[in-house]
Image (tube, helix red, strand yellow):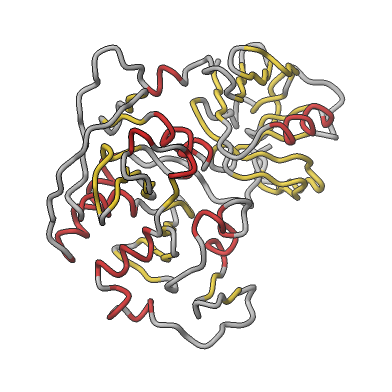
Length: 358
């Protein structure tokens, strides 16, 4: 079944990120061109035309990869006195003087939320960035920065790993052209009624403002494409999940080696399971799921175990109410035997790739 108690995680078209960046840059700051540095790369991203490799790739992947940091939108560049690479939602800084000699220990995410707020002047003049008295009630949580989180932004911040990724809020919520934003030390969140809460592309905007934005670069000859490398197979050691809706089989892989296989129940024809390449973005030990049946009646299922959301409100989870598997009958989620769901829940971390196909 698909629960109704989570925000969607659908990806917006890349061009929308670019439009946002250009619009905000034009309004607040001129470009300041920099000189790009040479880099050693291993993987090419078709949607941005950029490459990523070596320890930068390893750190990017360990911090959630495309789902948490976004795709690269610049090469390795020298910016603010150090080497770095920009991504849609953040920037990875290299502290070593020679990026070719850097190790994973020399690479860390930058405080792009605070830096961008300072560069745009938000921290000085925008009222949303001025600390207020602690907010109480309504489930609000106030931080030492003097700003509070409520509702969907608070819920997002409380998910495992997100607080470490973003840090504390440095603004309260504010609106721009129908989108609600809130800035944090390490990035920003945005909310729309259509798409719910997601990361704001502050890395893309920061790259544009520094003159480092590079989109549409050609693929170096012989370099593997990220989507190709992450097709229906895995690179050595990668943990990923294949859901075959034709055979009703879910298979967990480490690279090309299957480590778990189980029959599932997928979405009924009226409520089909989403197809595509997704990434686990939220996990819950247990959840009460509720929604509407096709006839308009309400369903409520308590204690749904081992929930792993991979797209919008579609999730992998255990189904204690089912005695058999291998057919289509759910509200869209991928139902599994509870024992297998428990194993998968402990095995699959945030950012684990999920391939759903016929």
